[in-house]
Image (cartoon, rainbow, N blue to C red; front, side):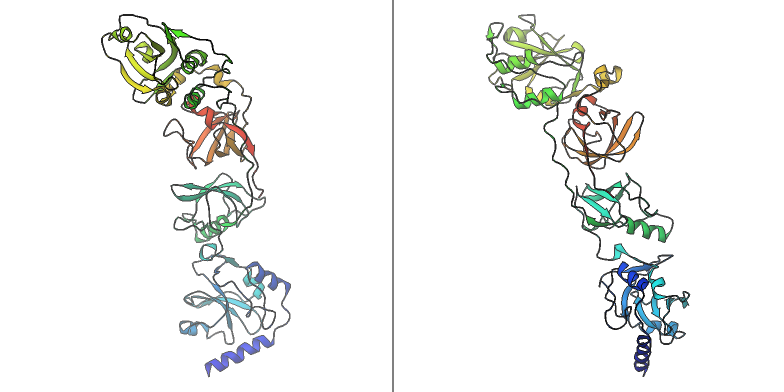
Length: 485
């Protein structure tokens, strides 16, 4: 009998149907549905099966599934004041129902409190619904180093930090509501899966958390490819024809700020204390031009706290080591003159000769080492104390191949990383790393991993510790486009 009455009441509602209003059609389509072409346009509308919705203004925890439904027995008492009402939306426990009344109006009924909203047109009630992105299968899956548009229209770039996805806001559409996050914000997406859902937590109200989560979840991946990287940056080692110096040693020479001219077409024979000097070693010793007065710090097997390049001949001095090795060549002074660094003119492998450290004062002490020259150079970096004591004018000279920072723009760095300028002032900018993972000569220096922030000056040049090492890698060299919001 009860079912017969319900069916008769539903038929009465449906018999009163006129053509759906444009507002009703617009709201159904806004929520992802499709108005019914036959039957009742709202009750028989087609809705995505796994989509869930929340009701404004509170956006409470009730997640509504839309479509014609029959509430369970638990809702019978709360429904008694609304004979003839037909349910077109309900949550899992029937705590919140959307009802179409016989007169064509609609209400939202809280069955637990037995309290209903004022009756209004169905289009007006639907206008208070918002898709619950976190509870629906609508967010795009995330992949690191891709561009996305969020549900609020912002453009973000996904980065992976310790296997978790974070999104960096690159642009925000004009006129966006306050539920979105501002440009340069970095926020974490769902840590429990690969779907780009933002679980906004910690805001004062459920409404704010819901709106922010909806706004900043990933709606779609953008088909946007960055231009290919430019050719080798100007501080990269040149590819000289006929180069005899080892590529590894050449790379470290340029990393440390040294330069070399092109090799001679016909190298002139050179000897050292009567020993022929092979061309690769001669080139390293005499052709390499180092920055005047610059010192380096090493942390390898032959640890030195200060190394200064210099070629010297100790001859057959009082050092037993030199008397035993008359072909020894001093190529540097370490620790303020406490040690000499030497190699041999007759080294078996002149492309990567051995390096020894000889105590300046302990005449009879044996030399430490050897280590290959490439390993010794790899252990060197800027002497930070020297940098702090005196800043070379060369560091502040306007560069030829750098890019001035611009707020909220995307840049490529010398080592190929992508960074975004998150704040700019009169002296430079703070940039956040979007793609990194490049090997740097120093550990624990910001700029190596996604999400890290470091400083550049007004010319886009790296400003920070070990500036000689990292300026050649982390400076801004190319302004890149980003998708428009």
